Each structure stands twice: as C-alpha cells, then as structure tokens.
Image (tube, rainbow, N blue to C red; front, side, top):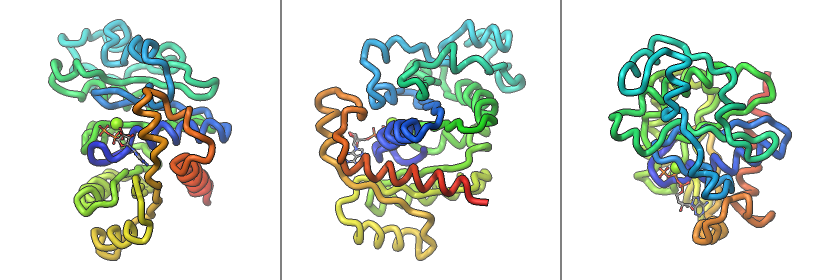
Length: 262
Ligand SMILES: Nc1ncnc2c1ncn2[C@@H]1O[C@H](COP(=O)(O)OP(=O)(O)OP(=O)(O)O)[C@@H](O)[C@H]1O
Ligand SMILES: [Mg+2]
C-alpha cells in the first residue's frame, strides 16, 4: 500500500488482509509505518497491540541475526541478509489462524533518525516469505515514498496506491505510481477511496492522469468505518453488508484473478 497521508492505506490494508484470509490464503500483514496502527484496524485488542515488539526494536533479533546491536552497528543490516525464516512464528501476532501481523517499526524510530534499518529488515523478511505459494503479504506503509526505498518494493507483485477523490491526492498518487513502476513493480493499481460520486471520481482520475488512467478500483465512503473508529473497534466488526467491505472484497477478487492470469 502506498499513498498520501490519511487516504486510507491502513483501512484498506486491514480489510484486504481479512478478505484474503477469508478466501483461504495465508496472510501476513506487515506494518511498516513508524507509527504502527494496523493492529487496531485488524481488531487486535489495544493491550495486545501495545505489547507487540516491533522488529526494529528487537535488539536480540538484530544481534542474533547480524551481530550488530541497534545504535552500534545498524549499518550491518545493509550488507547482510538476516536469516528470517522463523520471524513470522516468533514475532508475529496471530490475528486469525491464517492471518498474522508483524510490526516493523515504532514511533521511537525518530530517535534513531531513520526507518532504513527497519526497512532493510522488512525487505530481507519479505524476500523470504514471498517465495511460498498461497501466501499473501500485505505491507502497510508510511505515507509518502519511503516504502519504495531500500529496495523494499523490488519484489512486490502489486503496488496499490490509495488516493482520495481530489486533484491533490490523485496527483500525489500519480507520482508514487510512476516511482513504483520505475522500481519495477509490475502491477500498479490506483485505489480511489472514500468515493461518494463514482462518475465524478472517474472524471478526476481521467483529468489528473490525462487520459492515461491506470487500472483503477473505487471504494465507497462508509460511515461504518467512522463509527467503528469512534468506538475504538476493529474493522472486523463492520457489518457484513458494509459498502467498504464489499468494495474491498471485489478488489481482492480482482487481485486474485489478475495474479493468476498467464
Ligand atoms: N471508505 C472510507 N469511508 C470513510 N472513512 C474512511 C474510509 N477509508 C478510510 N477512512 C477514514 O480515513 C481516516 C484515515 O484512514 P487510514 O488511517 O486508513 O489512512 P492512512 O492512509 O493509513 O493514514 P496514514 O497516512 O496516517 O497512515 C480514518 O479515520 C478512517 O477511518
Ligand atoms: Mg496508516
């Protein structure tokens, strides 16, 4: 997931994760935001979410895998490929039997100055887990372009850039999508979220992308999301016929059939 701040990356990532899981996939949701909040969207209770030790904070892990202690030799993470086979079982939170969550960074990353080591660790992790069949990895990221840094996006099959139906948000989306495709991400999909008027949204897309509109998926505005958030509830509590759930379910089907094409 990429996109400007507040467009709905985390919301869509969480619903996609649940949707893939309900389709029988083994899902790993990777929260690569320095202010992680995917856990809450997935319905992980607050106390449990707070207890998650992010990869970047796990000094033992870094030391064990690379011989470097955070703050001393983080640079080593760039030259070594950490062994990460067992991270999902050891460091993942089990949300459902086939849906795990791993948190990469934390807000304290600001003290360390940079998400780079965390991104390097995430990358090594992803290079491994992506090799297995029937596994889906969904990376929710920081707003902006950092998710494309340090080669993290190199092996992504899809980049989903989330935008709101505004000229500004779509313009940023168009830049991020160009970046993703320059990095070699083969499938770039524009997800226009919080849509109240489908025709108007598509007109805006055509205007901003000047007739070269990418594959586009629209997700409706949904008051249920706001209600759940107000109550501090996860998106797993959304009503079955919730518009956003339906729209993300369709997105999941599209991604599955897209992925299976010859
Ligand atoms: N389809 C929707 N309908 C109504 N509200 C939505 C919808 N999608 C997202 N929101 C709301 O928009 C806000 C931002 O969503 P979210 O946190 O998912 O964005 P984000 O892109 O992950 O933000 P950040 O850049 O801070 O990580 C939230 O309050 C969320 O409830
Ligand atoms: Mg987010």
